[in-house]
Image (cartoon, rainbow, N blue to C red; front, side, top):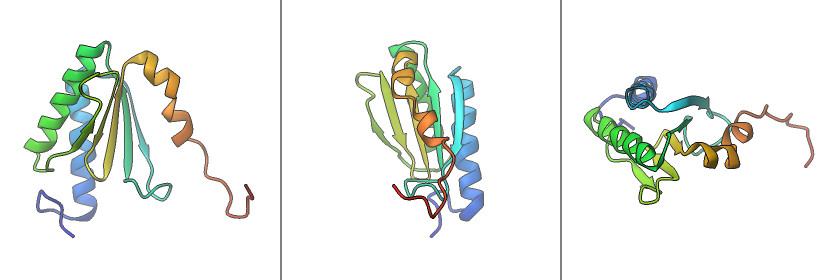
Length: 125
């Protein structure tokens, strides 16, 4: 199935992750971490986590990213948390972006959960 930008497969994923990372850099987001979740989750291909310095900065980073995704032809992403701007989640389909205030990011510590090594198939829970 072709992407909204009219490109398919790896090219679409590359365009999307490059767009996200460039937008976050342009917005001066801090501590940007990109996690490849292909094979770990059906939620998407990448999870990107970044911090903003304040409520206002988190909101501005998220707004800038939404515009960048739309301008790149990647469609309108779903957004949660923009009103409070403590933790904004942007779901663009293949990429899930979390923009946190530093205290909130430290509390939830998503990097630790998603960067954990894969368990062996035989491991019992």
